[in-house]
Image 1: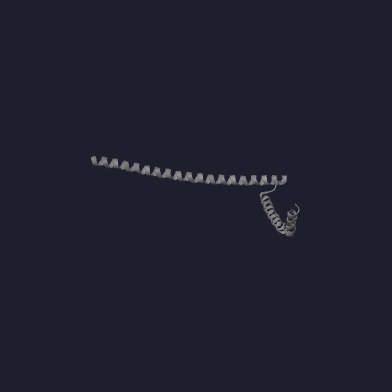
Image 2: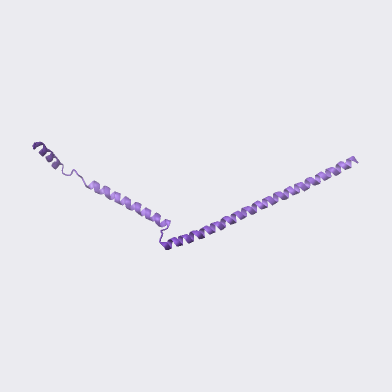
Length: 120
């Protein structure tokens, strides 16, 4: 009889373990399913926000265009053009500075100095 009680007890413990293992497997599967659904919902939300952002940016761009505000591309192009013009002006200034030589007539200076020395 003692042997039968032990067997019955072991059978009950084994059944509880099987049920516990099955419950843990179900919980893990439910957790994985919930995580995948959350990831999917997050991806859908990000896509929806991205679509709304593009639509908003397009509307703002159209409104700014109607007001005559230049686009960022136009501003960058103007900045490049200004930099090019600035370089040209600097190059011309250097060329003119090199062309002008203040000591073109050194003899005149020497004569003035000689005249100042002789006059007193």
